[in-house]
Image 1: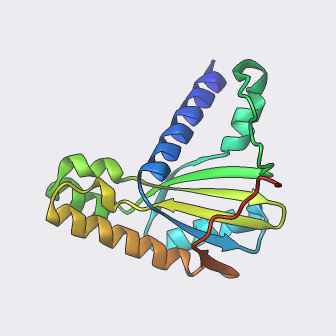
Image 2: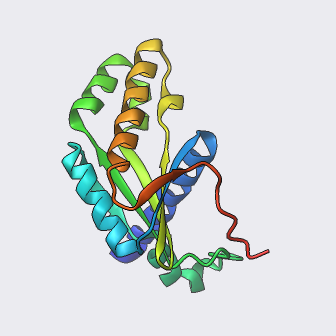
Length: 170
């Protein structure tokens, strides 16, 4: 029963992350490393940047394990070898946003997904500025985004990409 609850939570988090990514701009970095190494680097730079990781989900593995029951058509058609998500937060930044515009605090904790194909990984961070309702909270969420991007740029063998790769195989 606990495993099914975790899968349901994972699907819910994955869906909310997808909605967040579609509803707001994203920042993408390509890392010339497979998932295990890339995720280790991501966790290290986040920790060094003052962020606390509150949840780590192996989304692809969790959903694949339930695919017989879920029967999702065309699941993973881009053939990612791994997809993982991190939920993280800087408690001081969260407090600033909570005090400035509490509904905007829905944008924190922060999330990012790491998509892997073989020896390459793609870090996708949904920018939080769209969560702001006031000029004060807009300034705070923009500072979140700048700080997270600066931290992610510290990952070795990574670079920002502005064009989303076409993995459709066409």
